[in-house]
Length: 559
Image 1 (cartoon, rainbow, N blue to C red):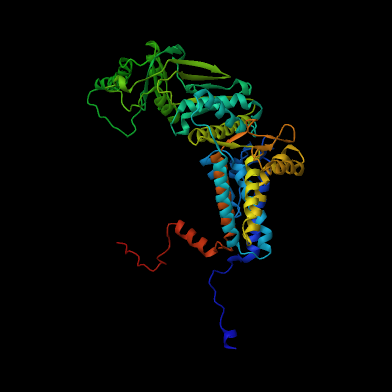
Image 2 (spheres, rainbow, N blue to C red):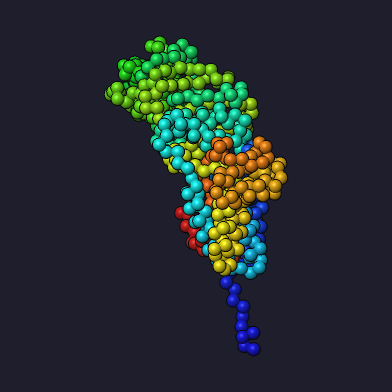
């Protein structure tokens, strides 16, 4: 009786929302599956695009899983995990963002019936981790190395990897054209890890085929003053001076005050200002540089001064472009014009200003260091060019990864089917419940070829049955067979050059399994209410603590 009369212990603030147990886990799984369903239709060469319209009125048309996930304003705490794995896949390998979200969603979908039947999530997680480890070992075993080939062979192999990535994008129609461009750009920067060494400039107008690669640096003509048109616009083997200073008359930043006793002295102060700027310009000319670039403004006086001496100048060049010119031309950015020596000047074979569409571009080509490249993209609509830029970013990342980890696997759902078959076989050797769990993991992997078929409008059941039969052949000759998007049947993905770097698949399976296990391991969600009193306190502190004394102080006596 006494136990019943004990007061209830209140741990959490009133209004706190707690949900726990099986219903909570099932609700999290449903949320993650719903997110996966959003990007499901974007997978593969026949994937559809999503048009996302945000509250600021910006419109984005994209096929890239990571971009869509970032733009969807997801508030469900468990579903946010899928957004994070899409971002990590994008930053780690660049491609496979839709794949990773789909796999994680499918793993959870397969786990749902087991959870409903009362299986403990820890058992599922243990089996999933084992299956993921076995899958990755199998990928490494099936991967084919492209190491030790000549440069020409390697180029064509890398172009095939880039073409596979681009085939699912908006610019898939011109994938061969862009694939060679991407490979040339990545080979141009060599072993430099900085991705910003490959610049991308967007110029509306023209067709996709008008896009071109500059083996060096290109940037839009900056704001210029009178006298600019008198400057020469083409140099062969010029010396390039890079500055981070203003070359113009400036009013004092501080409130300087000069008192004069004699009005004639005023002229000498004005002359001193002019002498300082002329001295700076004279030193630039004496350095022997024919192209002067500065991150800050180059004024009208300096522009005319350089034009009279046949020197090209551009001010307000962006930091990124200036650094890329420094890397390519071998120069160093200077913060003063004193003691300019030849070592800090860069050079290139050819500098010219060229008209691209209705923009004018400054192009530095044939740079000695050659550790940079610029892709100038053309196209009809702005959204289209932006999507092309995102697509090329994925392709560049893939080619860089393929150069570093030079192993590739068959794409088109072939590797997924092969791992699925291997895991099903392995599951038969296990006694106990985990046989069922590994089997469900294997079934989840089939979502990739199934979705490729659905998105292309083929009969997924029919194609999957053909693939299962081919992969089950004891000789192992069916391992590279995947979905043939063109005919609606199956084909040897290796022979058709549908390749992807092994690192993409390994990363995708790792990330998707981790995310699925993370969601399965959560059994309670606690949501704290935003208490009104807390908001009230915040408002009071924002007012600067006025009225804290409560009016008890003694007033000062007036005299």
